[in-house]
Amino acid sequence: MSRVVAARLQSARKAMNRLFETNTKLQNYSHRYSTVVRGAKYSQDYAQYLVLPNGETGSYFHDIPLGLDLEHREVNMVVEVPRWSNGKFEISRTEDFNPIKQDVKNGKPRFVNNIYPFKGYIHNYGAIPQTWENPAAEGLPGLNGDNDPLDCCEIGSAVFGTGEVRRVKVLGSLALIDDGELDWKVIVIDCEDPKSAELNTLDDVRRVFPRLLDDTITWFRNYKIPTGKPANKFAFDSEYQPVEKTLGVIQECHSSWKDLIDGKVQYHKLPNTTRAGKNVRMEEYKLPDAQIPPAVDIWYHV
Image (cartoon, rainbow, N blue to C red; front, side, top):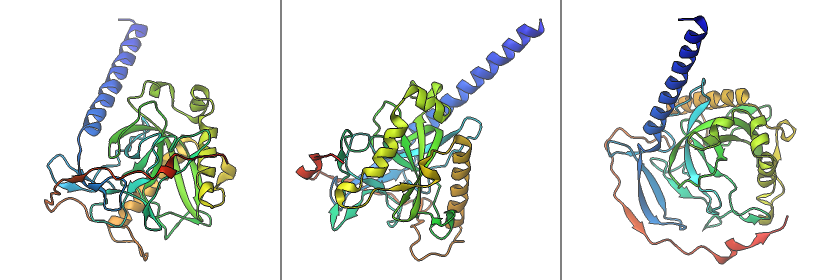
């Protein structure tokens, strides 16, 4: 067998192995979990809990593995808010098992405004499990973490549901400054998306989706303006950070999460760390959706 043929065969085997590994990961993570819902969606009492494969109640924050694959630049994502929707759902940092709840402001469930030309959230928005932006430490000079898991923005074509666990590819990040806190936004694409194979860097994103990264900055800068708040700002002169830097941030925030779980962090409002292991099982108590306020449909021109 010639060296050329042998090299081609070896290359083909490596490609098949990568495909097998990817498919295995997708099977392992995309359909492993289920949920239990309690209360009425769009109300203060709504909560969506994670159910692990063994039937136990788990934590979206602590019991879904990070799943970081540095070679393929992949990680796990918990979807909190589907694209085009307005309800600000997020993993609770205060309640046992960290269910997904709707953020409440001034005693009312919170919705983000529609800002021309956008409708609600412009990405599938969510969090990277087993990461934590430490509020007692500087993530960047002069900026402490926001006390939450790392946020991520999925830019593919599918619209995912709240509570889905997706395998995503890391493409870069944006360092938002939110009320004086560091609030990283990791840019990702679902590994099953048809465009995923074409995207490995931010330059690829600019080539395949020419306006998306600029529009993302615009959205995060302006989305609070209709509520009377000033425009948001960004670290690094509003420049996106590349994949390598972003993977480092994910690793740092995973180490911070480990310190949180191990009780090594002193802070006055630490997240709840209750997780699976005591065979707690939550019963479904789902009520009809509450009415979405008509004002949510207003289109703001900023």
